Structures are given as structure tokens and as C-alpha cells.
Length: 180
Image (cartoon, rainbow, N blue to C red; front, side, top):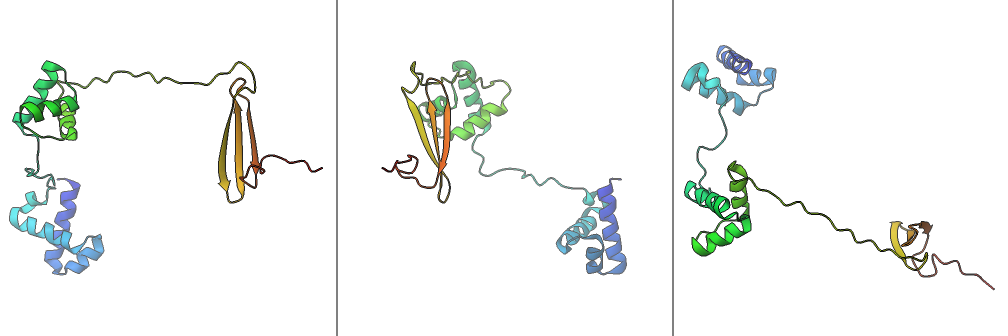
């Protein structure tokens, strides 16, 4: 016998012997509705009623993709090699069927017959490169805290980075003006 079933049977038997549900609940740390559920199930089906039941619904009234639509989606995928968005357009235009992209995608993913192959994309990086140092400098400002600003400058030729922190974010803040 499973340990969960033994534990529930103990709850039910102790509640029947003492007649005090509050005592059983306090002793085993079970809520009253839970104890009542197990007592009701025990009276209806005996020890077999103390087995855990699946909470999954038997049928879903809001289910969108039925077997007919599923077969149609998979046939469009295998015969014409269409993706989810094109399948959606095809279903809307030629079959008068409106399904969301998510429903179509879930159908395609759940099927082992029509795997989704994603093309490998190469990220292209565009780097600014100058031949002469100091020809182009990238400048960035970042507020670190109230009254604390970080200035960063990166040279495109040498990739040297200069970083400084100042109190003000004005034009005169990072530039040290000389007094004459």
C-alpha cells in the first residue's frame, strides 16, 4: 500500500474513532476541507477512493485545433514545407479557418512527423574602423547616481577607452576650464 494512502486512511480512521475532525486536522496539519474530501471519498469507494486523482480536465470546451484541422496543418507542413505564418494564411484564404499562430505552432511542435528546422542566421557586426587615431571618437554619458556622471570615450582606431566621473552633466562639467 502506498504511503499516501496509508496516511489518508489513518486520518479517516482516527476521525471516525474520535469523532473530532479538528483534533485530526491539528495533529496532522491538514485543513478541514481536505480531511472532509478524503472522508467522503473513503465512504464512496473505500480504500480505492484514497488514491490521488488526476486534476486534468477530461475534455476542454475551448479547444481550438481538432483532429481534422491538425491533419490539415501537418499536410501543409509536410507537402508544401510551409511555416506557421504561411499555414495560417493558407487556412484563412483557402479553408475558411482562423487559427492563431500559437495554436498552429503548438500543433507543429507536438508532431514528430514535421519537425521545425530553423535556418542558422549569422549575426553581422558592423564595426567602425578608422585608420588614423583620434579621427573618430565615440562618446557616451551615463548617470551613475545623483550628482555623479560617467563619461566614456572610445577611439575607433586604437580601441583605447577613457573613462572619467564628474559631478555635473553640462558641457563645462567634463572640460576643465583654465582661468587666466
